[in-house]
Amino acid sequence: MKQRLLAFSLALPILMAAPVWGQCTKLCEQEWWQKAKVNDIIVELDSGLDMSDRDLGGSTMLHWAAGFGVPDVVLALLTTNIGINDVDNYGHTPLHWAVLTGSSEIIVGLLEAGADTTIIGIDGQTPVDLAKENENLKGTPGYIALLAAKAASVTAACPKLCDDSWWKTAQLADLRSELEAGADVNVLSRQGWTPLHKAVWRGDPKAVLVLLEFDADATALAKDGKTPWNYAEFSKKLTGTKAYWALKDAQEQ
Image 1 (spheres, rainbow, N blue to C red):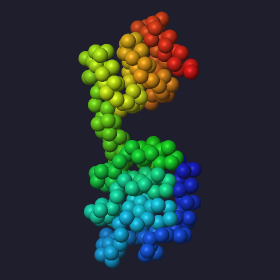
Image 2 (cartoon, rainbow, N blue to C red):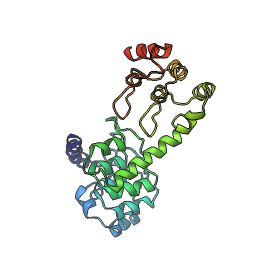
Image 3 (cartoon, rainbow, N blue to C red):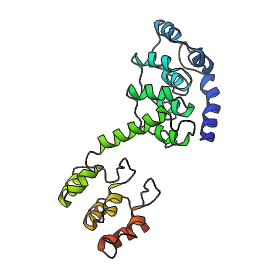
């Protein structure tokens, strides 16, 4: 995380060196945002700023405010039509910036305004991924809100395959029907399990075979770092079955 923050700070002079905004002498300066008050923002907005303007790094005013401003200033910007999920040249949203600089209050404000926790930057990281690397954020309201928002998005994207109660009553035909309808075979539950992890844990060889048929990832890692095969090795219900050997072959490929 320290290396990522260092890279972020080193990039700032480059971003500020050649802004493409028409009048961006203040709105592209870290120091200005750190001192800016709500009234300062109102004055700038009243001057006719185009909310879609960006600097050389593709960052909007909201990126700068989220990274270096104060919560009230960010909230003032959120009352405009500025894009809350706009990405800069690095694929980072204002929420990424807030996480990188560790502002818990701003993170909460962005989430309440509808910031997307699932957008992936060119570094392959979502805001939640970055937050997990930032020791200063852990345990804060912003960190907790991020995890809750991620869990909600997972549940929304996966109403059945990620639902423990669904698995308790689902028949094999139900599983096949969901997959044929386009359900993500490798979607992660709030517990960090794929459907294949869940089927193996339940000791359901038929479900394992169906999931493998639909190209389930046998090497996917759960939150504890284990693959479905790691669980299968100790499953009395699976040992020696066709599903057991199929899973072993799949994870070795």
